[in-house]
Length: 353
Image: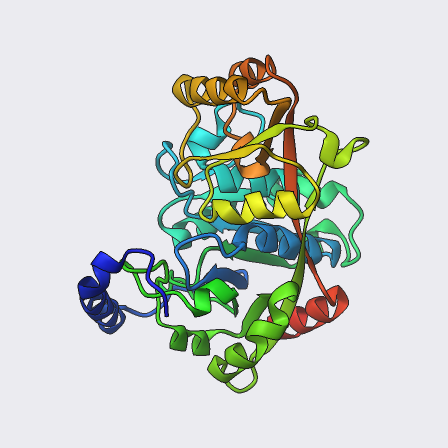
């Protein structure tokens, strides 16, 4: 087991004790009218939850479910319960970067708020009100394989919900990576819970490229009857130039939990980045950050920039234009596709029936 912050080893037992105390004091979970599919992880970030939330929302939507996503909206400046408005230029600041990305990519309603039960109640009430007024709600306008809009079943996808146990869930999906298996508990490492907590999961999701390294270890931690799914992750560059979209000497930048993974993935894909500038996870972009990026890009004679979808939603049109003085600003998407999507859909719906 490795520690990112070796100086914090003495604090790990205290953190573990706090976890046990919280479990002992936790009350009965509240139940929403719609079933809840939770997607979470044992790590503090970087497990790849957002692409999996998007993939699951698409699978359920395509099967005819009325889908929405409930999120805490980490790092948002807005208050209370709100539905993400992706049209607002300040959407990432008001609602959080990940909720905006999910809403745009999955094309389903995303609701944010600290109390996920209250958020779910608000989301269900909005659909009920729309039905009562006979107003098509979201993708009800699209052809459904599950009957008319009024007959469609609703389902909530709970983003980052493994530790949010005050809300009852029907399916608990947990992502685990090879890095998580060898990491330490907070604050020495980035794991929020002991690995034994994987025994609470209904489904464990691993990365297909890590299957050989982690499947046996993960299987020992799973409870009887739990399912093991795998996802294939790939970077998607814009057409028609692909990895050359930002020229031969692009500068990468990001504000994500595991930035080294983004840089190495770019290089593995053949994108010859000259350097990578890293900001704190969820950090906003202001004039200061953009000025720093411009200075580094000019010093290195960069041909443009490469960044993630999560970072792109935080760039205003004005900041974007400033970066384009150097060259193209290319947004690289990280897609997660289930290795056996039909099996995933079948097994998921069986647990929601």
